[in-house]
Image 1 (tube, rainbow, N blue to C red):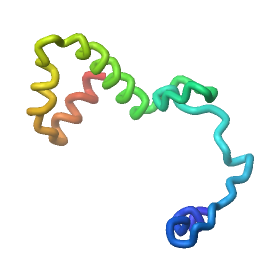
Image 2: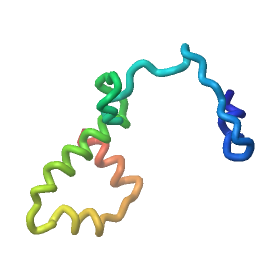
Image 3: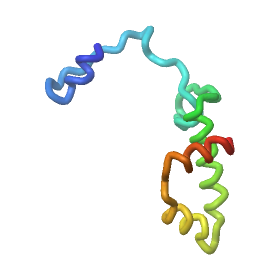
Image 4: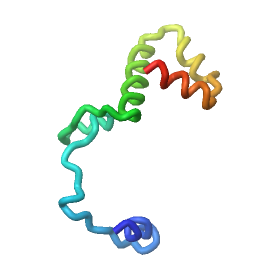
Length: 87
């Protein structure tokens, strides 16, 4: 099935996913309003929720301090690890 999915662009043949491999719930950070969901405890879920919280907070930032900082932020491995430690 994996090779069929990879070759889809070339062959146009869509692989069939068996019902037992289909997901029944989605992690909440995917925001699928029409699907059942569960609260994600993975690092990706935590990270996504924290970023969304920050974005909601800074939507009220009238003088755009957050966007100035964000646009001038140098993303490094150390910065990412420091952020994850804050979680």
